[in-house]
Image (cartoon, rainbow, N blue to C red; front, side, top):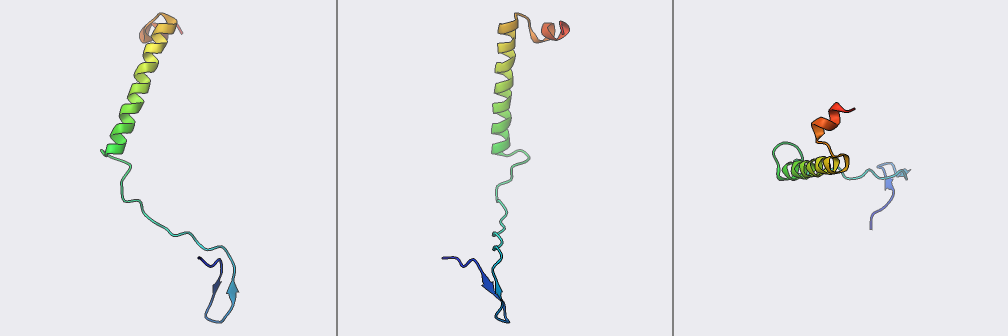
Length: 69
């Protein structure tokens, strides 16, 4: 059980909130990591499917759709 207060060397009660423990995550989330490559692949798949859906619904390709704007 964790106490929610501390007592200093003079016997004074300090009942402020305890600070959370600070930690550093060991696995990097940037650069050429497995996480970054999976995220990049998933976003590319979403973009590709979106382009196909745009072409199906509008009847034009992306370049043709952009020229008609």
